Length: 264
Image (cartoon, rainbow, N blue to C red; front, side, top):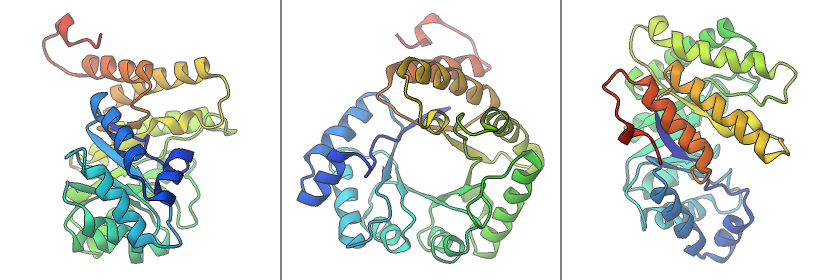
């Protein structure tokens, strides 16, 4: 299981200031920290970028790439901003992402073929509702691959995000278990080793107690690793959760063990 930093978010005050003032320093410093902590890729979450999406996205991409050659996940629902990011990027890129929502099928999915890149598929209904159980999630998976094929995007380009739910939801725990079952079962359902990604931080959305938040994320990231998740999207600066993910990844591998493999 590889770890992807979800720390670069436009919702953060310093990132908003960096964009407004065209000051790349806060972006560069944050990305360098993420790289130093072992991230295998950077999620560039810019939000929709409504006012000047092309210029704003290019600014973010250029700022990030000035300090790393790691792959980038371009995370925006704005197709104009997405295309601008794909044009500006020199690093390997993954589109994050598309769903059965008509606008994303029409505007985001075709960009994966146009730029020949991987794309994340969210298991959501066309109205953005989260499915309730494994059966519903599997139905959406099949529809996502059908839509991708129709758009000329090969199945190997799709990375499935089953949508980790907040525990605060009424059925959050049930949904969290459903996600694990989907990850385990997808290869058998589809007949090939489909890649999967999950947002660990989603699990504790709204949690006020930091210690309890960390405990639940540590526990769940270990369960995700055991289920066979390929990429964990998380706060790479949270040492406790990252250490748990690293240890879980070791235990999930079928290879000779040595204590030197364990994160210090």
